[in-house]
Image (cartoon, rainbow, N blue to C red; front, side):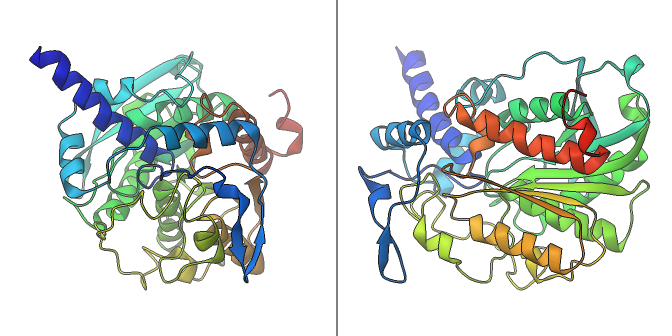
Length: 367
């Protein structure tokens, strides 16, 4: 009887991990019944639009409360076999058909780093061209290549490009700046080592969701200031955190009941970043000279206004910018595409924008 008991316990812990991943934060907070009925802004209540499938998902989370994200829980998560974590990723669509998946190890600032290539074409059919470097979400404390495999594969198919997902060091074992150090090192190494993947890379597209969206912004800034072996052609931050110096209105409006509440993230600051550094708060940086950008947010996301502020500053800085906001959807939607079916349409929409930004509008349909 001991084995089934352990597996059930592990599944509970893995379930807690699942809820935190798309958010790039931690577990989803308890969604109180009718939570969207009274959001206060300037002392005026209004009811934000919530899609029916989003409402159903939030209600399901409310019916299945999870333990708080603590150091102890993180220690338990670290002990779970990768295959068990992967088996619990039931809110997103599966990886699906691809031409090749390949694991590669690279030397990193803190030791070996794992990379995984997703390509809709096998190596002998892949011509020289851009590569997507992808950083997973998880509040800098959880997440992995495995947890974001479905999204990485979808990006590869829709963009018809190789996507390389990066395993970077996580807090609390490795606090800031370990994550941005690893993210930048991975982008530079990939730019120089297409041969390790039997491919020739001519440019980088930097992307990631939530915490990985923050790493996207930080890495792109670093590569602007000190270019890699090939140029950064575009960045695609997905509901990124961009400013740790203050709380924005959306951070208060959607703090509870929308999948990324204050009860969902570790109460202790495990990342320990300097909020005044652009490597933690990239909104503080000079944004002039950045590559074309497609920035994605969700209307019910506590991080929404950080994304809006970054997109606005990009435009003010003369950067070619497309902004996509998933109306009536929540933070993490791109990894909830099975649980929230309409999120797949949002994901295809922002990837279509990325194709248009990269190749021109005529390629966004059917190529």
